Image (cartoon, rainbow, N blue to C red; front, side):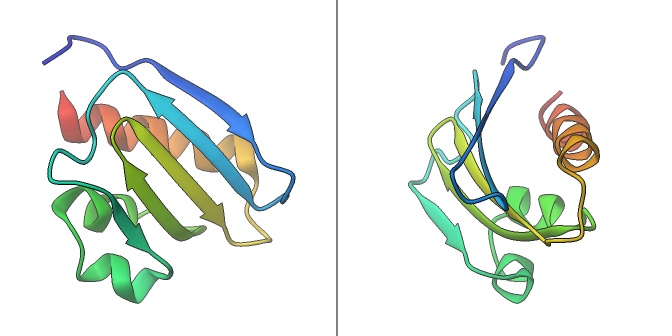
Length: 92
């Protein structure tokens, strides 16, 4: 396990979608897709952990990539900060 997590953010043409690429394998058992919070509550431990973040609406996890959909009223900078902190806490 790496001693740090590198996270790079790319924003989609859709203003409510962002792609976070990390240096970790976030889905070792294969791709995961959670179209809403209810699906995330039944998902992998990582998905359940991330859906504890207010403002996260949907999540896809594939390898080292998270594709995140936010609630429209959520601010990206705050949501990205919370996701980054959650990943560090979960993996380190």
